Image (cartoon, rainbow, N blue to C red):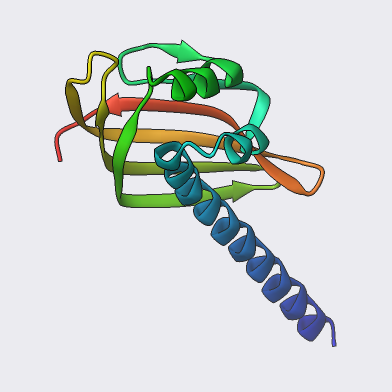
Length: 141
């Protein structure tokens, strides 16, 4: 009887962890669509109040700066292709490691096309997952 109970607990824990991983993976992918489409309300909801958004050039932004720069066109993504992404959940923290191609326009309307490795850290706040930290590094794909 104990073995069956332990087995059920293990299966339940595994499926709960997989559910969280799927939720985070979907959120992190939606975030890129929201950046392209300039869905400010969705991005505002997703980003933690104390988020650090660190770009591949070392530029560090807070939540309001990311959203304001999208509004003014300083940040202007036109296409984001996720090449690979993995999600690891540890209790109330999730880490996404991914690679992708990021295209957009600079404020002077010149194009950028970057291959990036990125790490994102999400924390659970109440029932919601919030983006707390994002760091990108240039790579060759």
